[in-house]
Length: 248
Image (cartoon, rainbow, N blue to C red; front, side, top):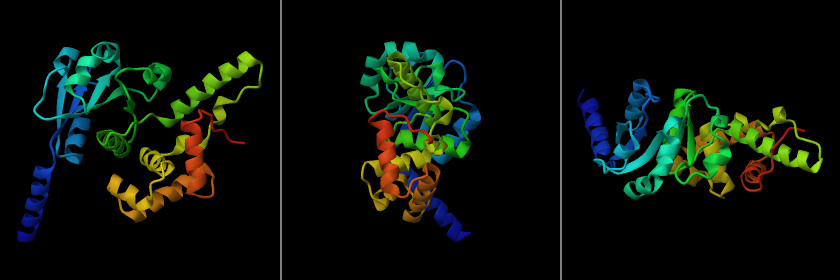
């Protein structure tokens, strides 16, 4: 019991040393359930959850710095209209759109890309462990978009251009298996594409180097490539050149 108590005290001390941060949820429809809020507080004990129903109530200081703002899709336009004030009050916060059904098409990606405020999308129909991984990524400043809708939107945009030029179109249904990657795998692949080594990725993600290698093995298998260099090249091809990735 003494050892358990010491371990508990040590864990509590570490938590108290963590810089306290706020996740600010802007919603008037209860889009983030109490169950999910409890899961966040258990996973990130240094995080405090604040919920407000009006944009004006979000444009004020809170007890600790705001690290992440989650905006209900119904309040996106209103929040964007106050983006200057929100960014002034919470300069280090990343803002994500709460997407209820993982259908980014509800709000076109082009509209999100041009937003003065929103930098990510948080789907609400993911498995809890994946959903918490996306939250962790955002708390670290990483941006996230659901892969499948992203790729389909890019294909539609390219097909519109091809149709205008009279060229054959690319079947949307045959999108690459990039969409099969989990949030963690997408995060790691993005780091690989920026030249980070496994040891650095492990530290950044709070994982062991062995776990990173396992993730890379799954990434390589899912993408049907031979090594991390080819996987990174595919990722950069999608992200930078805007070329859709399709199966042969």
